[in-house]
Image (cartoon, rainbow, N blue to C red; front, side):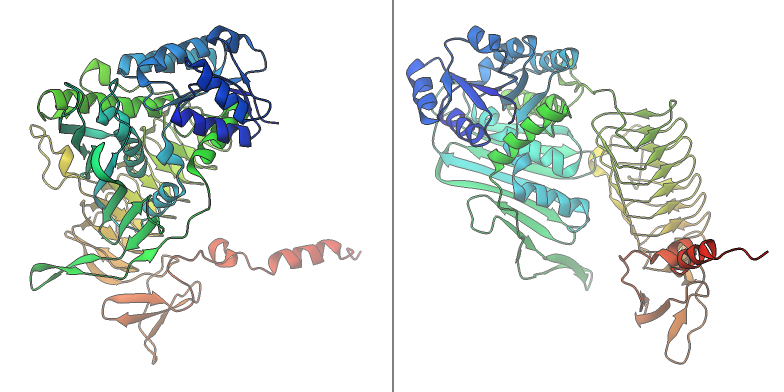
Length: 567
């Protein structure tokens, strides 16, 4: 039996929440200003009762959590009363209509030890969940820009404009997909039906990594459209919630031919998705967090991030599209929770880890390190003394970072990369202290298994290939092929390295080079392109090759242990 939930607000969306929570066996009571509407919802679901007042609902000891689906202007007061009564809270978007009000709710939830979750539904849609997995895995390449259209002819509100009504879902999804909040934004719109209540807005978000995004929302549109497009250097993704194939990948690319960009089109590929109702996934997640006391995916801090973006966009809208910088006004400061290291993660007492961020099991952050909010680090990584990981950085599993390395926004590091002491990564080609170039950050990708030597420099905008080896002190200014050994300033290829980090010698009669340690064979499949004949470039090394231990060692040890000692 799940925790008992009370629902406040039985309108159109509240009715959906009532249905799902009842299906999950968690709905106990409902409340609405319209007693008849509340009674109709209660009568629809056996065992559900209509509460007479908020006081009666909060006094019920069987109610452990409350879902709030009332008009946005009432969210703060109702959520505050629920948190003060010791109830966990799921509040529909937006968290509040002011950042300071949102901050007060986050503080109150932390003080009372309560779960506070915001209903950003797109974060629980299987298409968005899968899209985030594809982006994190590098399937789309370097992200260029995003745009979303959320358009309809439907319920028109007077207490909140179209920006606050429609855009929160898309802002939440974009921040999650990119792993960073925008640094600046602008918004233009128009009010046609009610003065000062915008019916149509077009927003632009600018991220520190260099990605830009547009959000077009309207409730004065001839048909319903819910579409999110993500454009990357390798693939483009389209999430269209009203289509049969909700997530489709387009392998379109742009190649330079005769010194001109040329579009190379590919056939679209539909991405299989889990058969999950987003609202059910959201409600199940809330109940799980109530049960385990874990922080929700869309917790109060995430809600504050979205709220800060909305507030900045509203400011820009009122100033006829003037650019608003996030984080500058006091109202736009997003609170950060103290980081609580999950089981299996080691953070040295002198290190600082900001929340929210992701750190996988087995990872160690050593002396004086700093992991900033928005960073994502995989399992079994090691960060030496005095390392810095910026927000938006993605680090895979098994990565080893030696002392005095800073990893900047825009960097993607795949599994089993080695970064030598004091190596340098950049994200701006022509930095100036006096000139703000946050919007011009360039991405850097270090592919699986590559090594960056001590004091080497990797200039932004390049990709270091799988299992490549950048020698100590080298300066990389262009892409490095898989398995290449590069040295010097600027770095130049002087040979090939095996996956074990040993130089590959001369080719035999069949054009094959062999690793002297592992015996794995390699061949140039075309000039300048080396491939391993025995393993895929992204496949893990067999245990005996990775550890130097034969698969028969354990058998021999057991046999020796069981053999009587002769005297």
